[in-house]
Amino acid sequence: MRSLREKLALANQKLERNYPEPKLVYQQRGTAAGTAWLNTYEIRLNPVLLMENQQAFIDEVVPHELAHLLVWKHFGRVPPHGKEWKWMMESVLGVPARRTHQFELESVRPNTFPYRCKCQQHQLTVRRHNRVVRGETTYRCVQCGETLVPER
Image (cartoon, rainbow, N blue to C red; front, side, top):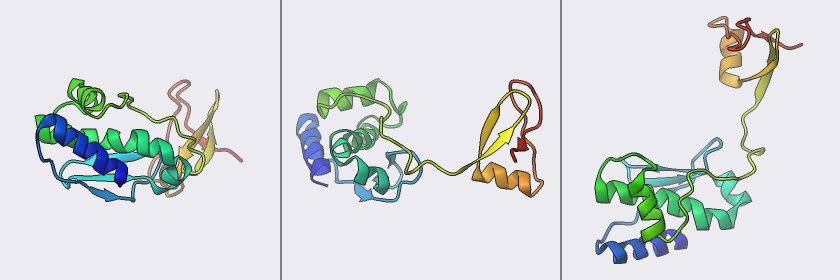
């Protein structure tokens, strides 16, 4: 929260504005470290990745998501990692403009199920696996075209 407030104060000073403090929510799931929600003006952080990478979140993730909200307030709807976002990250917030994180994801990676075709093994997500089990769909390998079957 301190990092968010410091970066917001810096941005408000440099941009000569008084943008409000966004809501910080610790509900991001999956492999994303964080997301910026423009319509609710909030930043969602992944609590598992936050605990495993505290300093990187402070230095990189919080400014990254804040930059999305500030760009939206300052420029309106523009490409998410376009020139405006890069400018906001580097020139205003003083942070390198990196689009993705390099965190270890083992603790947040979803369970997968092994499937096989003629040429290779595939890993299907729980959702896709359950669709196969319920008979709702089949999946084919993009390489050989064969229907994927559960590995025994």
